[in-house]
Length: 136
Image (cartoon, rainbow, N blue to C red; front, top):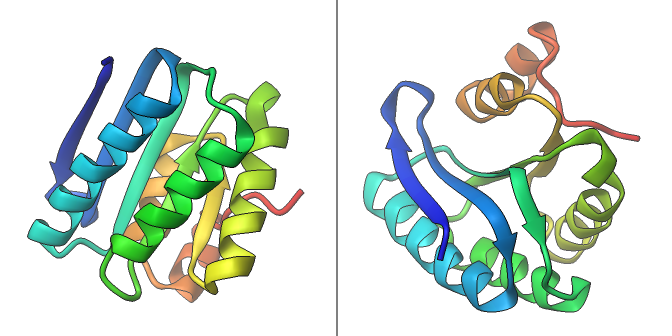
């Protein structure tokens, strides 16, 4: 398994970074660790960084795990994804599906700094900093 989960107190976030090939079993294992760190630290948001990863899991497996993560996080916890521009179509589908089905704040980003800003700030302040999720 090639992932790391950290607590980022400055940004009030729990951060998961995947590298290399990522299958369904790694997604499930990493989401459980991310959930544990996020809830233990009472963060404002959880961040999944896949910029250096190649996701090999099927879309339905990804969606099930992301929905499971959202369900396991404390109410009101944001969930952000950071991915390469060429991966945004699949990320967009996952984000849209999970956000619609759960009613939670789930966003996608190209830049780690913008994702952390969005997690750290309320919606209006994030908008003023141009740190809102991608809407394309």
